[in-house]
Image 1: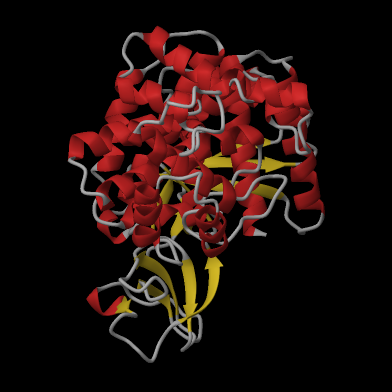
Image 2: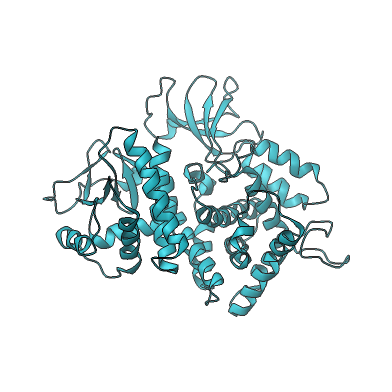
Length: 462
């Protein structure tokens, strides 16, 4: 049920993004509005609820008193709209119409200056003829750590320690990553100028994220539509490139450039017709030829920007070229892909194998490793081995159950691939555990414990 709530939030954010690029009557904008109203009707008609509501607090979505980490990462456009309005969130009720949702998208795409007054914002909605969407009062954080809608009388939220939120720093980073990838993909599609400097700045933030936790939030991300998963793929490839770069001992500036290359590697897909790019079945020969043009198109877009580095261009061009020279674009026999392209190739394939898509289930990391190692001529063994060593069988961010019934999140891989360090979150009775040094269990040292079950895979589940 909670996942349905998250999907509805992401559909709203996706519709805002589409309206920023297009216009009210565009098929994409209309499709998002219709899909949202249909899914809302199904939810409310079968759930004995009068409205679907969620809050926004300090740059993150909240529902039922708790953070929604995944939607907070991919749905930044909707958070920004709430912040401009000065409201604490939104509530949707029936009979909401697609026209109401399109008008909501239009306001979110066009309002630029902060309103900051809830009454004025609600008047703006009424002026636009938007019905069945209520603006919530700003939320407050209670002393027990939960959230609640305020009465409208509070001038500010109850003080609290943001450091208690484990994922807050990474959520902020990933929100920025989604924004820059989405912006550059849109610019590539419409032949606009790329924001290479912005991509590099975000690559530096990703490369500088502390410790092995760069993938910790990936377990929470899900993509209910095509546009968000194409963006998410590039974000995750950039994150995996950081993991490999660190493992191989690259200097920080190289890890930064490699992360940026990962964020930009698929820009050429913006030039591929959507009926081919998102076709769930097998491509025919002509469609495959068009699809296989995306690396060259991406390299051309980057070169035309005048700001992309050689690494960015070479990885966009070469991330589908195998170690044996096969793949695409077709290259002469003497050509060998550069090492940066080989790194992004490994990240690209691993992410594709282990990620959920609207048309397929995720593959376990173990099975993905088997496939990739079996095809020895495809991958440079150095980045592939570094990826396995860094992630182990249970990538950082994976939610697991131990043999004693306690549940936790993998903090880092161990020397033995099946014995990671785990940050415990719940006891054997499913009660939350306080966080601190005692909540970490290193399975390398606890021989009586092992992973019994994987709930979510951090590097691939979405």
